[in-house]
Every structure is written in C-alpha cells, then in structure tokens.
Length: 537
Image (cartoon, rainbow, N blue to C red; front, side, top):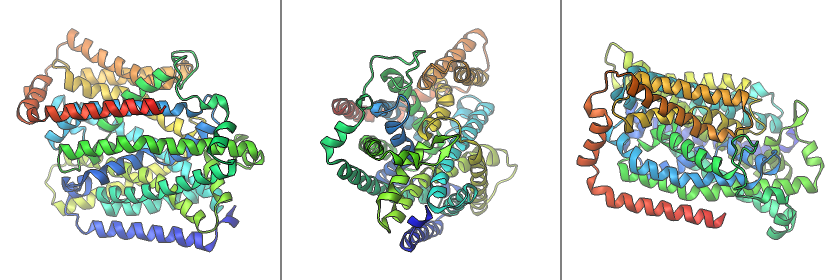
C-alpha cells in the first residue's frame, strides 16, 4: 500500500520528527542532574502532567485495540466503557491516601518507599518486577505500531521496529521527563484531532449519527452487563469484574507504577498533583468514548464494505483487526492527511514508549546503580549515566517486540492481561506497608510471589475466569498471605517512623491536617463525576 504515501505525507512525517527532536535538544540544555532528568526539578504544572498521563493511557494499544474490540472481538462491543467507571474511584484513593504520602517522602523511585518501610530486598524485588513487566508490555506497543508502519510503508517488520524505536529513543534520551511530558501534550492534541476527523468521516459514510447507531450490531451496543459475573461463566467483560478489577488495576497503575507515579512526583506540590489527576479523570472518559465510537463506525463500514475485512493483513489465517483503523485512514484520507494520520499513530505509540523508557531508566538508576555505587558521582556524570541507561532499555524493549504477537486477540486485551497478572499483588505489597504494622519484607515478598503465581495458574488452567478478576484475586492472596505470616511468624519490623503507626500518623498530624476539608471536596467532585458517567452510560 505504499502508493498511498505521497511526497507531502513524507514531508509531514519528517517535519514532525524534526520538531520533536528540536524540542528534546532544547530541553536538554537545562538539565543539570538526574533530578532534572527524571522529575523535572519537581516544578511542573498540573495541565501538562495531567495531559501527559492521559496521553500515555490512550496509546496505540488503545487507538488500535479499542476500536477492534468494539467492532470485531468475540464478546466485545461498547462494554469496554464499563472500565472507565473505576477511574474516579481510583482517583479518590490516590488523592486521599497514596500520593500525599509519596510526595511527603520526596521520592524519585516509588519503590524507595519499600526499603524505608520494609527492607532493601523488597525494594529491589518490586523494582525488578516493574522493569520486567513494563518492558514486556511496552514491547506490545512497539509490536502494534510496527505492524502499522509495515502495512502502510511496505517496510519489513524489523525495519519498522527500528524506525519507530530509534527515533523515540533519541528524543527520550535527550529530553528527559520534561521532553516526555511536553511531547505527550503535542502528541495528544494531534491524536484527538485525527480521531475527530475519522469519526466525522465514518458518520458521513453511514448517513448520519442515527443511521450509524441503527446499523451497529445490537448485541454490541450493550454498555453495562449486570447479568454475568465473570467467575467461571466465560464472560470476561461483565460489569463487576470491570468495575472492581478496574479499581484495583487503576489504583495500582496510577499509584504504584513508576511510569505514572514519576510524573506525579514531578509537580510542584500535592495540590498540583491532585489537579493533574483530576484533569486526567475528567478528560479521559470523553476520549475513551471517542475512540470506542470510532470502533462503532469501523464496524458499520466493514458491514457495508465486505472486502474491507478481507483486505486486512492475515496472521495465522485470521485478519489482524488491530489494523482496521489505520487501513481505513489510508484508504479514506487525501494526501497530506495520510501523513498526519501516521503522525497521530506514531504519537500514540511514542507517548507510551517514551514515558516507560524514562521510568525504566529511573528505577534502574535509583534502585540499583546509585544504591550500590561505592562512590559519589557529580550531577553531570549522573546525567550521562541516566541517558545511557535510557538508551539501553530502548534496545531491550525493541528486541522484545519480536516475541509478543500471540498473547490475545486484540492488542488492548494483551496489554491489560499483562498488567492484570501482577498489578493486584504489587498494590497489596504497598498496602501491607501502609496499613499494617507487623508485616516485614519477606512476608510481603512471599505474598507477592503467591499472588502472581495464583494469577498465572488462573491464566493457564481456568481461562473461563475473567482476567479482570486477577487484579482482585492477586491483591487478596498477597495481602492475606502477608497478614497471616505476620501473625504466625514474627519478624524484625521497620523503624517506627515508616510503619503505619509512625509514618501515616506523623504525616497526617504535621502535614495534612489542614487539608482534610479540601480532600473532602475532592471526594465530592469525584463522586459527582462517577454519577455523571453512570448517567451518560
């Protein structure tokens, strides 16, 4: 399909790439050390951080996977929107209890808290787990966008991976967290503009909004499914697993995952962090609804044009539904806009890849390199090492992209399956630190291993149990294991300052007492947002 790429399309892509590299170079001049590189000097505003968080969530995995899920996936449809009901609940937990604690400790790596509360082994275990799982999940992102590049340009898969990865690595190495955040904002604006354009074209093709809704499969119109529970009935996307599983997943992702927490730690104060989370929460649902609506349009278009599905590239004799949106773009858009549509898809991939590479570098530097270094380095040398580690992680994630093609029918399911395997147990380790006093490091690690193992067994031997429940089940297994071991086998605990008795009471007494009324207001805001979303649904 290379005939659809005109010279003006390549010009648009090149100008976009040059612009991002210039921005990264300009930002690199103000970096003086690792804190500038990883947390932006802790002086970033709410809007860029909030939009950056949202851009990472709405990556290529979503832009390709969600429409494919809505339009084609077995058991799919608009039930995906149930997932969004968990976001306001997760934000309440984060605003009231999690982020104030982490901001108080002035962390760079969120896993440094675990050493203070438990021990070094717990910190290293969670940090290494994050690095392994996040690198593998990021490889899915690289895989999905490389398929698009291959489809449109005619380049082979290997060349497509190199094209995307090399470009992203360069501007990530140069720009640091500020480059990640500001480029994410630009990329999000381009992406939203292209989604609106594609949705408009699909509506016009179908004959208007009422017509497109009537032509959409009635079984896929269902948004809320209260009739199933997902605990062995074979219905993965019922209401309760998506609400409760989503709640545990989002609290873990936004509160315990370095790729998200790092940006929240880059703001100037806790109120700015809360505002960033509020911005993300308020704007996230309309964006998710937009790309799900694109899935509705693609389904109607495929029904009216039977050759469309047959023209999709095949994988093991099955159409690659993840490529439906880009295939429609290159067929429906004129020259110039095809290039802009490619930029939008590149932007979606880069907004995830750049932030993950920076966070992988941060955890490696903070939790391993600096932690075990016998000598003190200058700020300049730390900056050089940080950039080098970012480049190394870029090479690793690109290499993994060649092995992640068969995890799930759509890329959005694949990325969430990988996360659900460990998100619940990881959240439970932090919960044991914050909510218990007698639990020590090896209790928490034992619970983590048992929780992940339980989810792995469910994946292998009980596939009829919704993988969304893994987030809840893994959390429960890990937390209960830690509490029971603490009751049965006493261990030497952490210093009182970092136990639930010490740290939480100290923080609430000296730092946050005057903020409870404000926090109550946040709770009301998010309750109203939850009610609004439910009414819209």
